[in-house]
Every structure is written in structure tokens, then in C-alpha cells.
Amino acid sequence: MDNGTILVVGGAGYIGSHTVRALADAGRRVLVLDNLSEGHREAVTRCPLITADIHDCAALNKVFTEHTISAVMHFSAFAYVGESVANPQKYYHNNVSSTLNLLSAMLSYGVKYFIFSSSCATYGNPQYTPIDETHPQSPINPYGATKFMVERIVADYHNAYGLNYMCLRYFNAAGAHPDGATGESHRVETHLIPLILKTFTGENQQIQIFGNDYDTPDGTCVRDYIHVCDLADAHIAALSALLAGAESCCVNLGTGKGVSVKKMISACEEVVGKKAPVVAAPRRAGDPSILTASNALAFQTLGWKPRYTDIREIIATAWNWEQHRRY
Ligand code: UDP
Image (cartoon, rainbow, N blue to C red; front, side, top):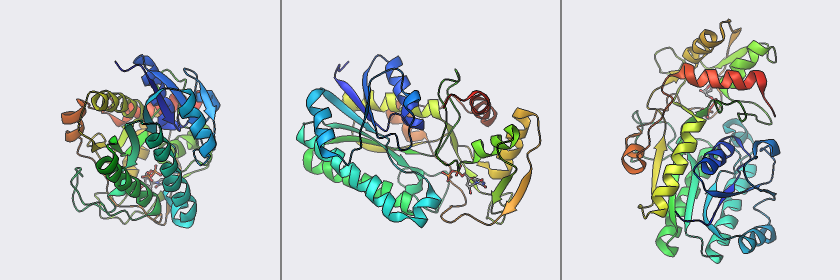
């Protein structure tokens, strides 16, 4: 095993922190770099945390000078679709421009392995589902566009500079670590599962269904919810594959199963044993009707498949976190 340090940028955030735990479990030496704008200091317990922003070139250079970094995992990005439509500047500046800084530092210090948090939002409105990796990419919101741009940049850096990469296209990350020590905690919560669960804790009055006239079986949007620990495991597999000489590529990470907003509300009610107060609301800008993954390539290239295949199991971990959250 390569015994250099894995630099995890954004490792105090939701998916990053679960991946850091999985890396530590796998015996990797890990260093987290996070500006804590969205992340939580309490989420990083297994390795050192450097609080800095990747826009800060001096801070980046210091990290690469002081540590022998063998690979970089890059989770740090703003990820609210609605906000990206309202304030695209924030998204292009943070998600694209800061990534260029990070890549420049990697080139300067000869770090050749890069794992990037991409998204199913790069596909836009799907022409067919489940979506495989050859599906055309045509993002319909600035968030998806930023992820698509970075994928292109990384592919060009691969061709020109020999950067080895895996772009992991997440579908909808969900759930919490089953031990309850880490989970989802956003500055402003916009995600469906925590918002439903907060109606049971009394934190929210009701859950809004954003659009019930989509061209889907029950009229509400369908998404592919993938457990955060499954995502973390896929990163471990991607890192091992890359370091062992795997071809650079882009890989979907999803379960392959779609769950509608209405079905998600019913499943949460079943897990918790209470009824959620539901109201109809207009469609949310930038939402495609259906996003479900083909995860065949992930299995083929990474030997990865999700362990959580029942949405109720995923919800149960999220509900446990919601009731006992630590941050
Ligand atoms: N959604 C909803 N009500 C909410 C939050 C989300 O109906 O209060 C819908 C949203 O329109 C989308 C799905 O739930 O179709 C998942 O949204 P989320 O924000 O969790 O993830 P996204 O798909 O935007 O990454």
C-alpha cells in the first residue's frame, strides 16, 4: 500500500467526513483541509484538520510542502441547486475557480492522483433512465454546470499532464453512519429526507412537495438515494484502483432504484411510525423529473456495489442521527 498521506479537501463535510472515517478504517494516513464554511470540526476525529480555504494559495503550498501527499480527494463545493440558480457567481467562483488552485498545487508538487466529487446533476434532464456514464451531459443548473466543467478540466489535465483521476458522479447522498457519530448537518437544510424527519422532531411544521405534475408514476420527482457509507466505500475502492494503475474514468454512484418524493414521505412515516404533515408546493427551479443510476460500471471498475439497498434502512440511520445529532 502507498503510505503517503491522502489529502481530503472538504473532509469535514457530510460525504467527506464519512469517507475520512472509511479511509482511517482502511489504514490510510489522512489529512483534512476544510474552511469549515459548511463542514464541522466535530466531524473530523480520526486525523488532523487544517482549517484553510483552497482559494488561499499560500495555505495550499504550505500543506503540500509540509506533507508527502500521494493523492487528493476533493469534496469541497457548494451543493444547493436552488442557490446555484439564484447566485451562480458563488458557485462558479467556489466550485470551479478554487478547484483550479487545488489542481495547480497538485501539478506543482507532482501529485498525480485525484478523486473528484462529481454529480448526477451533470446529466441534466435524462434522455433515458437508468442513466449510464455514456449518457450525454447537459446540466440544467449552475451547480451541475460547475461539476461538469471540473470534469472537463480534469480530463484535459489527464491528457496534458498525466493526472490520474476518478470523477465519482453521486446520485442523492442520504443517511448517516450507523454508529450515530457522524451524519448530515447543513447550514441551511434543503434535502428531502432530513426535512421530512424534522417534521417528526417538531423542528419543521410540514413537508412541502415541490411539484406534483411531473411525468413520473405519481407526479413527484424520482431520485436515487445512496447511503453515505456506501459512497465512502466507493471512494476507498476508487483510491485503491487508481493507485494500482486503473484507467482514469467517470463513474456513477447510485443504487439503481428510484424513489419518488411521495414514496419517500411514506417510507419515512413507516420507519418513524408517525404521519408527516404534507403540503403541495410549486416545482423547484432546476429539478429534473427523474434521476436514477446505472451502477454497472462502478461494479465493473471498482468492484463496488451498495450495501444499503432498502430505502427504509437508509432512513433508519438518518432518523437515528436526527434524534441524537452531535453537531
Ligand atoms: N424536495 C421536496 N421538498 C423538499 C425538499 C426536496 O419535494 O422540501 C424534492 C426535490 O424537489 C427533489 C427531491 O425532493 O425532487 C430531492 O431533493 P434534494 O434537495 O433532497 O436533493 P437534490 O435532488 O436536489 O440533490
